[in-house]
Amino acid sequence: MLANRLNFEPMNRRDWLSRMGMGMGGLGLSALLGQQEARAATPLAPRGPHFPAKAKRVIHLFMNGGPSHVDTFDPKPELTKQNGKVLSRPNLGTERKTGAALGSPFAFKKYGQSGLEISDLFPHVGKMADELCVIRSMHGDVPNHEPSLMMLNCGDSRLIRPSMGSWVTYGLGAENENLPGFIAMCPDGYPIQETQNWQAAFLPGVFQGTYINTRNTEIDRLVENIRNAKIPLSAQRRQLDLLGKLNSKHAEKHPPDAGLEARIQSFELAYRMQLDAADAFDITRESKQTLELYGNELQGRQMLIARRLIERGVRFVQVWHGAGQPWDSHDDLAFNHRNLAKECDQGIGALLFDLKQRGMLDDTLVIWGGEFGRTPTVELPTPGANQGKVNGRDHNHWGFTMWMAGGGVKKGHVHGATDEFGFKAVEKPMHFHDLQATILHLLGFDHERLTYRFAGRDFRLTDVHGHVVRDIIA
Picture 1 (tube, one colour):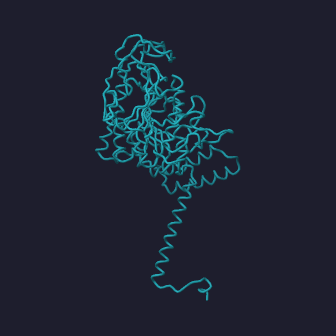
Picture 2 (cartoon, one colour):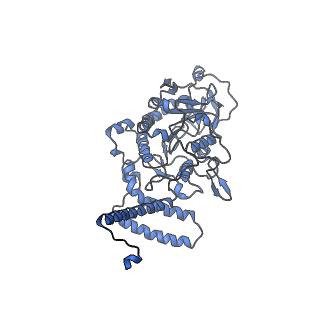
Picture 3 (cartoon, one colour):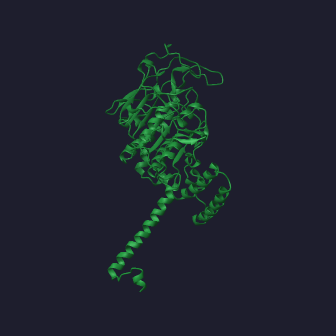
């Protein structure tokens, strides 16, 4: 009688096995859905952009200090002809006084089917010329490191604003809950402006870039506290759960606290990173062939780690060429630029080649450049500012070069131009805000709609500026 009231029907062995099997599948599905719901509730849960994207992730290669465009990717044969002569030049302000023309000490060569001209500083990058979209008409606002770094990274030269990597992870989330969505790698300490370069500002703290000092090679030093030698993961989990309960009770009694929220998220992320970070940063797991491809230099190691991170779902990886301003060649430009390029050329070329052969370059946007370029004229001795050798270049924000590869940009393409000497962008000028708007567009975002409300207004990376440069989009 009880069976009739519950609408049970007699079952044979086959029916019983079938229904029980479906029940176990349902239990598995409910567990999976529970995990997905929990994942969706986290700030770094993967999210879709405004429209179909060409790029899913970004690697930003930051040549800190301002590499000279006329010595790398913007050949100026007329400048070489006029070497040592006083030039007729536009009335443009520079940070320091400059003198006569300083022709490039480097030879330029055409590479690939595209015939892109690249200096002999970057022969490995030259091999990948047909993948590059070279922007020779970049320009900024001022010839100083600090505000230019902030403008390029954060969209404002003075005020505290979220960095580009923070905006990208805010918009897209991450694809690996055990790793940060945004990682900044800089050997030997912080660059100028320090952590402001990868700050989250008024965005939730979970979108802040995670800094890694890649001078270290041992995993336990590369990622601090990655392992706990005394307490197993299970005990750490219990401690963290208790701490979470205490923090939650504290939060209930106080107004919303972004700092507390960020702290809770950082504890959780630090715990989860013990599972995946050791693997992601351990390049010894790569084949001998891959290690030889990237080379033994520090920069090559950084490039390889960057590839391993984006493979594992990190959205935005910023790779800095050292702390301070290594490319800031006010003196001895020929010597310094050659050494700096030697440090990173093989690694950059390897990164592009490796991404391409793995089928990842099409949806990975690689960006190369610094905060400005350098003057075509020689820098004159300035007391207390340089060594007075008269063989370097001053900062030049009026016109310089950056390049992008993959992620939906045109291949083997040159956009815009500076004048015949390289003083100023004169053809299709492209401001930092235009670059940022275009990067967000490639990632599937309307830069005017990717906003965050703070202090009574909607903020965005490009502020009230910026235009998508469609000429460079494939």
